[in-house]
Length: 138
Image 1 (tube, rainbow, N blue to C red):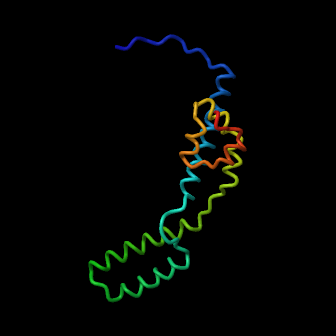
Image 2: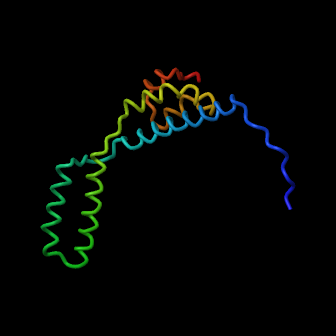
Image 3: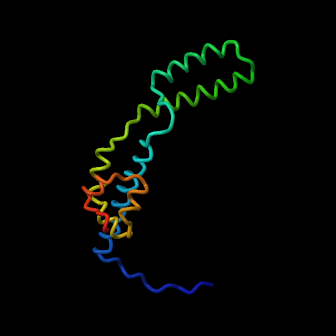
């Protein structure tokens, strides 16, 4: 049987505040990095809502005379295109995320010992780091 632990000592207000600060900073940094990843340009020709809609209309026409296997593939493509069309309408406010990031980045960087180059390697622009007060020497 495991030994009983002694009485817990209550956390100090400073410790609670430090934990809360860390949670907030972590959330802000995570949201900014996720936004960077989501808005990163992809290779190839960009699809617009118009081209996706046109392809959806073409699929509806092709389904009328499709073989069972082709029907299956077209139905899946239609499902994927509808999902893509929905995600196109979801816009990410990178200006807001960057502004929030700038307010916490230096403190977060110090507490986690993250270098300037590591930020750059994950796609954070130099201008954003400069605004946050993180330099190449950090």
